[in-house]
Length: 220
Image (cartoon, rainbow, N blue to C red; front, side):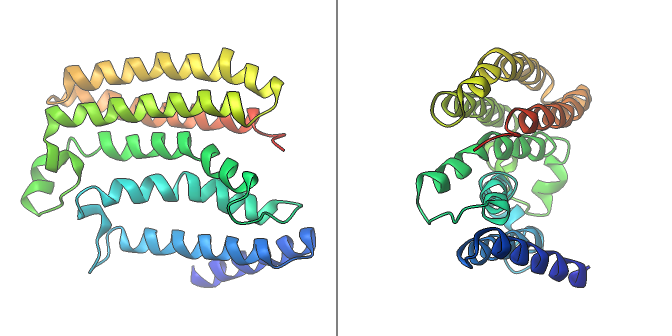
């Protein structure tokens, strides 16, 4: 596994250098890749165990599957050198926000069925810390932030055609599906019926990611 990972990183670095003639993108994409590996390892591994660290698990999943993912991809495949803290840098970070939030919601809603066992073993994620009932609002807030970030992207980052697709396709679908999921969580948060909404949270993420990638396929 580690040999394959090393080969993958080497190929990304080589491609980045060939595209830009500079080592800057390759350097930063390597740092981000290493950060992602460390987050993945220490999410459950001792002594850090991010998944049990009072909400740090949720934050790390958001970063690894959201802003860090899009930023690292941008550094790896860009035909131009991306300067640190440039407009392109911040745009790539923002583009990862909705994906990161929706991935976090998958983790979050799947913490409900494990609430009792997680509490016993000291796995102090947000649902354990706040309780099932109060934690429903975190899921709802995440959904609202995802929708807000889509609106921001449509108004400030993408081109006119992409903006229309966001406004008339992706944002309305996200609002409707999110309302369905939030309603289910609020009603069945303490019931086995919640499993239906756990599954649909995953389905929605898959559908959203597919449409999101198609819309951003020609992102400049």
